[in-house]
Length: 337
Ligand SMILES: Nc1nc2c(ncn2[C@@H]2O[C@H](COP(=O)(O)OP(=O)(O)OP(=O)(O)O)[C@@H](O)[C@H]2O)c(=O)[nH]1
Ligand SMILES: [Mg+2]
Image (cartoon, rainbow, N blue to C red; front, side, top):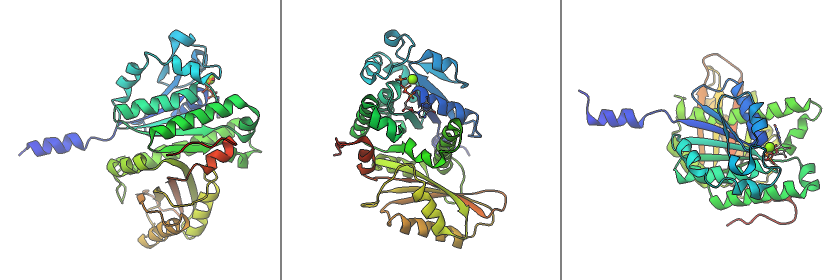
């Protein structure tokens, strides 16, 4: 017997629709990397820019030029205010698109005109149509921030607007890529795209795939709403040494931060078919202790089909405070409520 209840279950159990948007030059390049990665085809990818030349050269399926009437497809030229003004009249186009998704990642390099103007703009539109949004702000290298006032002020302005919007703001710093500084530049940037792929994949895994311990979109929504300034940590290693995994995750996080008061943590673990419950719990315990016992510790686990000694952990650490960001932006601190 097919009941109205069954109809509601079918309709509401629909898989979450997910979109990853890259804004500006850096954001578009990241989308191109993601498109050539093994990210599941069910995740939609889109590059948005004010620069028609950059979009034309980009190997991505979905591209959107914005601000054409004002900027004539020539890009933002580092002028955040001008790009913001050029967004007059673009809102409906973006609203129509964003309304179709449950979860939207929006990624941009800070410092230029387009990414710094559009990251808060698009995040605000997502919130207005009730699409869950994870804005990812990639801060320029320290040398760029120290030597270029425009880049620093564009970054600061964007972060300040994003903080005012509330919710999760995932901040990564290019400076943390310096640990790979002897590698070719393009390779290092591609590595960063790989970490962003891990981020998207792990959040999607948690809400979309039947993992062993399931986290639903509701959990993720609450965390995203409460997380504030957050950063990403990724670690991979032998499952016999949970402490080394935690150490690696903190050392190689994408922003240097101190845990003053522990914020919420969203952690995703992926292991082989032989991962025992004891090992699983000892890894979770090591992370809980290593991250100073966060009040809110949400985790999802995915067990791969094959045996493996290697576990991979992706964690989003919330409410890390503004100190890490302020250190990079220099004297004038960000205003936090
Ligand atoms: N193009 C590009 N820039 C990157 C990349 N990774 C980091 N960046 C940095 O991202 C910051 C913003 O640069 P872009 O994304 O080119 O700037 P934009 O948002 O297109 O802004 P305008 O060109 O001024 O409109 C700069 O600090 C770059 O150094 C990358 O993979 N590609
Ligand atoms: Mg550009």
